Length: 454
Image (cartoon, rainbow, N blue to C red; front, side):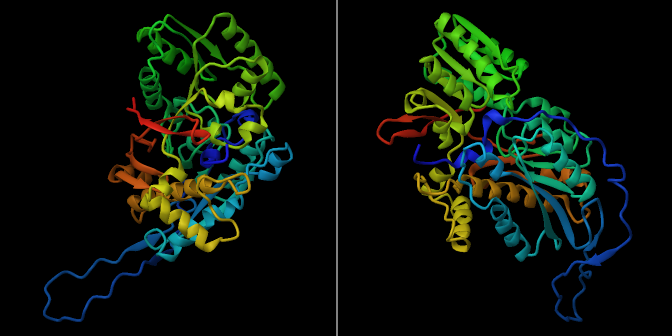
């Protein structure tokens, strides 16, 4: 596809998922780091001896938690090791990922930081082809660097639990791969996801199927790595009138591309034998569409994974014939929001282009352009969430105050999203969804109808 490859920050290398393991507690993570204090600047009051009002109370900043000093908040930033991906023959075209975040962090710091504290980032590149890289980065950021929270991309999604399950490190980011509700349920510290958790997204999938009149009397395949989610959605489709629903659960490790391809080829043969009318794919699409191509078989695919918007979908074996059958449930893309003049998105992209004209973010990027507009916008969105949440927590910044402060955020819009909301019990921010379809006129997948969320 020549245009918006914006969502590639969420989907890089769907066939390269790593084994997920959780890290343990950080020992002294919640120990008071010491009595050091500083006083945040407050506005000078006029010298008016006739006033009877009480003097403004000084705001005292302390070293309130691991990674939080009287002058700074240390955060970890997880990024994909693009050289490792390039070694596999896939150029995702993101450009300078570190600067995507640094530009936003510099902007926040130049405006006074978070209630007087400056954000201090610690960057880590994680290779998606190294099974131990994600856990190594987790140990380094939490135990060695002592960060307060982590932002960025985790792969596989369950690696988020290395930070959040112990309850001492919030995670703000968009995991790549087959995200499950279990990651939210096992998280003790907040796992703040800019999109929608699977249980809310499944309602939008059902709405998309009904919009296309694709259920009544049809044979539908539901595929994914989360057996419980596959079963739940399949049951809902049966209740809505499907003649038959075939469940296929992905068991192969996505890091083993040969095993994954063999398993998918077997599933596709079953779809052909059972004359499947359509497929709901709850995971990434790179390997699935490549398997369609190998089997000379294709049916409509309803999916929530935006990897179908990325140029590398072609590198992995898919063609426009497969993409014509994709029905994508997603938010508006970064290019669409930018072209529509969406204020926060335009501000994010224009700031980047002004500072980095050597790596411009181009809406509807062509083959000769970097595919960076999406990852730039995601960096803006995630750092905006970090700013909102840490500000809402107040000057005594701890995981507890960070969590309770989410209740004061409510509904907001930001780069990459027209409507989002957060609370201490709602950690997935996304509150909108659209159905995307192939456009013969534009030669790509484009936004179509609005969908109701479940």
